Image (cartoon, rainbow, N blue to C red; front, top):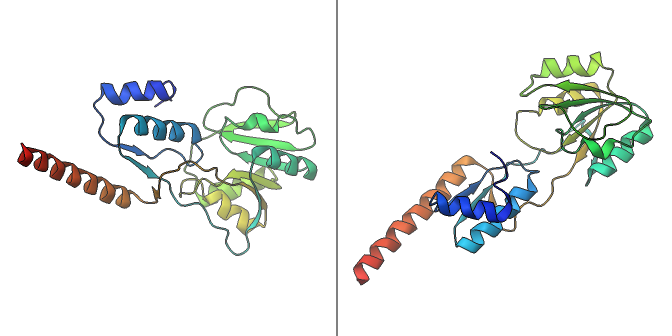
Length: 212
């Protein structure tokens, strides 16, 4: 847990723990730690396996408005002047602080800090959520729009399913680019990559022994 203290801190940790392979399985929107990992591994000559779960794909009857930034999402929902389920975690809530014409139900695991939109309620919850719960929540709060990150995975996808069933628009924040190295999408692929790396390491060790 934590950011390791930037690139230099991560390098120190990798050296101290004698790490020989790094698997980056961080959240699809955790750009900083992934870029730090790439730099640290490059400096130390360590192999890096990047796991990025597949993004959600728009389905029939989905009403998505796709944006590239949280600021664009804020501008869009503020113009609509409706009731918004803001389900993006706590760190980016400040992007919506200037929204004075919309009301927000801010759902997060931990309470957001910093500036918040003028009209809001905070709901502290941890997923996963089942479809029945999400439908009840959207109806109870008379939600008009959902703002979500395209995180992928199954843990919070039920809000997207609920929006589809209720015909609610979803403002979907597209993923940033995390890696310059090739990425895999499943744990099985990670295991395969890791096994191949370990096999090559063993073979290289035997070759060095034979040379001696």
